[in-house]
Amino acid sequence: MSAIEVKNLGKRYEFYKKQAGLLGTLKAFFHRKMLYTDAVDDISFDIEEGEIVGFLGPNGAGKTTTLKMLSGILYPTSGQMRVLGFNPADRQKSFKKQFGIVMGQKDQLARLLTPMDNFALFKEFYEIPDSDFKQMVDELVDLLGIREILDVQVKKLSLGQRMKCELVGALLHNPKVLFLDEPTIGLDVVAQKNIRDFIKKYNRTKKTTIMLTSHYMDDIKELCERVIIINFGKIIYDGKLSKLISTYATDKVVRITSKDPIEKSALEPFGVVEEHENIRAAIRVPRESVKKVAAQLISSNLPIEDILIDEMPVDDIIRVIFQEQKKEQGGQELHP
Amino acid sequence: MELMTLNLKQGLVIIKTAWMRNLNYRFTVIMYRVGEIAEILALILMWTTIYATGAGTIKGFTLNEMITYVLFGNFCGVIVRNFLPAYISRDINEGRLSMFLVKPIHYIRFIFFNELGRAALAFVVSVSSQLLVILFFLNKFVLNAEPAYLALIVVMIILAFLTEWLIGFLIGSIAFWTDEVDGIQTTVDRVKRFFSGGYFPLSLLPLPLAVASTYLPFAYSFFMPAQLYLKKIDLHAGLMGIGIQILWVIILSVILNVVWKQGLKRYEASGS
Picture 1 (tube, helix red, strand yellow):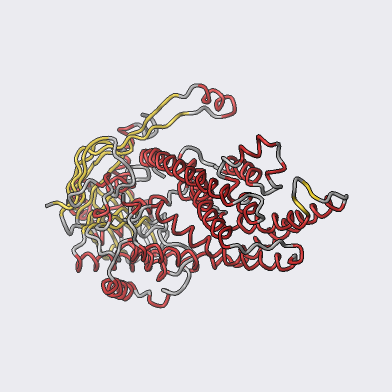
Picture 2: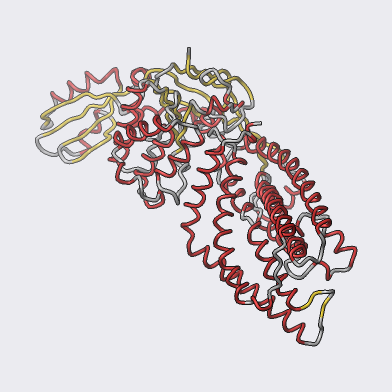
């Protein structure tokens, strides 16, 4: 059975448009034109138990709206969804006890309390038995290495420490499904990696189904085999991350190392020079002509020592996809 | 209904947590008392000045009774007061309500216990500071230790706490429809203060207004318990008042239920 099933799900927000200024405000007071935007527009996907799926998209693409619908915060306007066999919109208690959610931009822990006091409160919310609670806290705290901060007020913690505590809070009741909305937002590289490693390990041992959104491609690359890319409320890609690369990466990157620095202009005839720094450079070349270009580079009289052919970074591929979309949509994101 | 299921341990932990949370506001807790005491002293000073002009009694109140009214009424007012409008509206506007919607606990239930915890703490602190003020004016304080009256007062205060809680929650819920509730909150606070008898005993009002005020819930947070204490009304009138309070609790609960459901629908539609 799939842990998450989504069929033709849609969410339409209604809003009023108001002209700028006082006059506009007055006009709007008497007559308002109702407009709408489809934040999520007819999306469908299934997620199997134990899968980690990366949910990608630019700001306003509909990622958070989707997660909010799946966790029962928002009612969908159309379509069906099932999480662990429940309709999240019913907000049944038995459903709530089986999933967890972390929103990177919204704290669930009370700032004035210590993490431990917060956990004790959650224990009551979820009615977790004493023994399970102790074991779970021990396990998670060790895994994240946060034992020494358990008795410090949350407001005194660093962002990274707080996020770790947020994760513990969301996992205490051993959820079967976990929604992570930007869990690494604003964190430094080390803290990001810590969180990432934790999620990976946790998923491996607990077989928790995880849906993750992130702006950091490293998160996605490290954690998710499968990605769903959403833009303007529509799914534009759903599949293996590796396949995304082979499908959409029309270019490859030729990385060269030279004995002496080479002028950028000397490399430009071969392709788009993406990086150029002292004795290293990276040139983007269409996939089909990469062999030819590599051969040309070697046979040229440039002082080249080494040539490496790489796939395009995933970030770039996705950026290209989004840019193409934008062109097609003509930047209509705000218009109904 | 999920809301009504009694899980005492859960409630106790929420109360305990509210204590921990509010003990962080040591400075606020103390500064609140300073303001309270200053206001009480100002009222006592005012009445003392008025009575000094030669009036023996004003509408049946002697100076000592008036001072007792101020002291005892404020004592009750402090117990039943809450800060729910600001609290609830913030949770709604900042989207923190979402965090409760995903957890297997009802928000209203949580807030109820949380507020009970906060009020219990405020109670301890206020009682101490108020007792201090009362001690200071002890020679002017009218004593009443009759168990029947005191019992009625306790019931009245508990019901007043509930009523104030419901009103506070309702005002906070307005945040579902508008971004700010400060304006309406301030207005309601003033109306409440007036009709609670916080400025002066409601019996000083023209009779129809004074009678009408006893049918509003506000008088039971200050005026009515003080009147009972001073035996200005008898036990029978006290019981009548409790009946009115129970009616208000029922009416307000029903309204809150409807408003909250509608508000949630709006919240779910737009999200924050």
